[in-house]
Image (cartoon, rainbow, N blue to C red; front, side, top):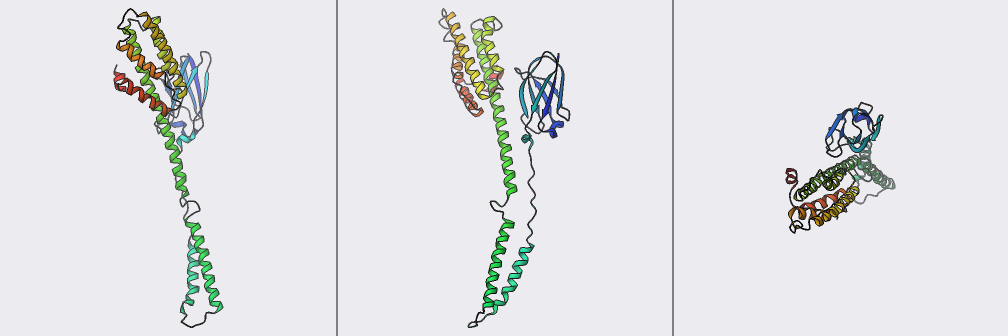
Length: 315
């Protein structure tokens, strides 16, 4: 038995609410669940050495804060350090901008009104003195300056509500992060379903060929599917490459099996052979490099192969 020590860095403020799950990388079963100390230290004693997957979860987030594979060493303590992204927890309140002080503007406009009021008593034919004209001109100038000052106070240059713009930008970033996480989770769920379908097709083929899945020949088929199942959390490019490799190797073994069954003319056209052959041909074309592209590819596989996820899981 070995001990695992993990340090969670990046955002200590949420350490008290986090929990860490230790998962079996193949079955995704939870082996152990622990709660970190306030300093982010996690201690998992007495576990079997080998490959695991850690999942750091928070009650306020739908998807895990962080997931990554680890390996527990057979000798001594295994020390792992993980870094979480503080932006996953960002929820900045809208900035409270103080109201502009409009009292000087109000006082100035009142003063201008009082100054030019006396000029409104002129009658037809009365001479306009230079002093009267200058008073009117100065009043127009002061009114212009006051209006300009007012626009600066109540409508800042560029936008009238910068605090709302900042909050909307943050919400957009948070939403995109959530959307990316959900897209990844959906793609990984589809991977598991497609792997279960391929596993079912392999077992149907072996049953039809009267081959024990636990025999050496049977393990040549099932082992490739098990290897692919261990890659369900890989990045899209890595998983698509693993899918193509598994499909090519399974096709080679299927051809060898067909050659050995050449005496049976109905074997090559049987339903188990046709189903897995069609499935392998599709998997060889998987070139998805993003989660979105992978979801679209899996929809194509579902349309071609037929059957829903519930049907596959029932089998």
